[in-house]
Image 1 (cartoon, rainbow, N blue to C red):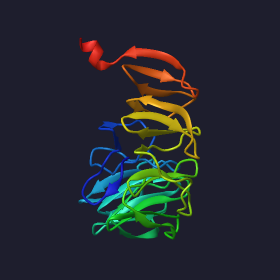
Image 2: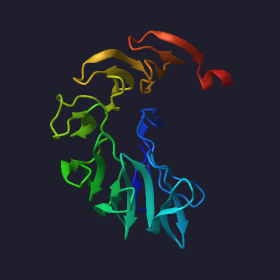
Image 3: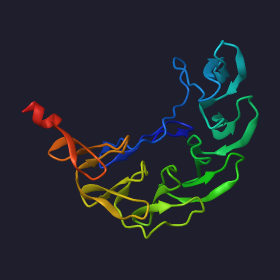
Length: 241
């Protein structure tokens, strides 16, 4: 899960490995890398130590005046000034004042933000949708966000209410109605109610895409939504034997 923060970015690590849980792909700008908008194809550029955006013709659309920037999503891009993050629109107007310690891009109309040591969600004008009350929470997908509440994981909705009593050791985002969930050492898949749709038997469970997901057992498998194996290949360890 890539995030915009003042010093660095982090990724989603589940069970000691990177989980392909279809978190939104967002990156901060780099001097040698373009960050493009999802609508007007604005690309970040750096000038005199500051960042701005150019359009597809190379014309400056937003002057270089920010300490760092992120990609546009749903019409807004994260920008950093004086170690705080906010959001601008595609004409460079500041829509949400820089005030957060860390942000992710907008997804389903809300953005995950960090204030102090707690995460919450704001809407596209900077109003709190879910007050900052979570130490660990993922972004919304299909109307729900996986969150750690106490020592267990569950889903919360856009009002911050729990969809069910948290009971998983780890929980990924919903895609195509299914979310990877771990109890003990094994992963399976649950629906939005937290009901098992595919019982836990995997050491890794990726996100569903087009009705298929990658899972690991003693082999690397592709399964369908019923959990039936469609394709199986030896694991990397087995190939080394």
